[in-house]
Image 1 (cartoon, each protein chain N blue to C red):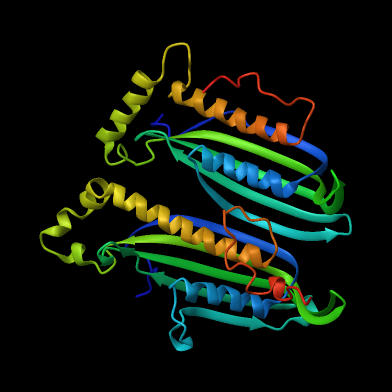
Image 2 (image 1 turned 90 degrees about the vertical axis):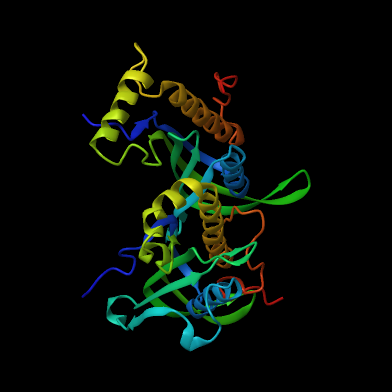
Length: 181
Length: 205
């Protein structure tokens, strides 16, 4: 077994059907990443009108942040809208454009180790990397390499999950781990 | 001998994205908007013979649902430093556009009839940061031994700053196209504003 390059965190999913402010949600998500110091990349976006039921939109995002010289926090995110239709709604006497759609949102967070390839050169460096990972970074009973960074990544991704739940005013909004990191 | 255009170059892909849109749009105006943005931002010259269009093809296949258009651009920019143009780094952006199912249609927009297109354009962009663009360090008898350590260690901050700048530039280009296609954007300021009529129609009011 060679040195690891990726340590994944559990995937988080949100599904929602209803009326919401899509523009607001989109900007909130992007600003969350930017405020947290991530580099945000919109890798792919698709816009299709497959039927009269509405538009289908797919966004594939990737955000990353250098945590230290060895570790990078990465979040892959898929954001899909099905049957999206714009609606004009009067709220507090003001006309507002909202969207009615089904949303599917998935986050895959992971740690990228040795992203600068400092230990990628020769067999000796690779062995050193493996020693660092399995003897120093992996603590007994934890079973995850770089668990102190992994924890931070996971709790931060949970916060993003909570931001969406809050924005969509879901019944299960809130985050039991809001005080972590 | 055939070889890849980036073979032997010290380069890193800084940003790459893909945009697919299947709906009404005016293809000629989309082409113009993309061209104008690149010219305005210093990626290409306004002179048509110098514009780096590597490939353009249009296949007329009406029996298969519509025409097919391809165009490939490789645009380059030399970043500007405090001391003038940077001689070590170069920004390169490969832009590939592929349109399928392209049809001429007429639409009623704000009570007026317009000729436009319906189809599925797919736009791909890949931004690369090229180091030692003229191979000055690589060919130098002494400097060639220090090239890697200089750009990966000693000038690391400069390299990361260049990377960030290029990433921003590449996404500003995406923003310009998304603004034109009336898609949701996320940068604080929309690119190009509304100067180029969105989807080629804009507002006739």
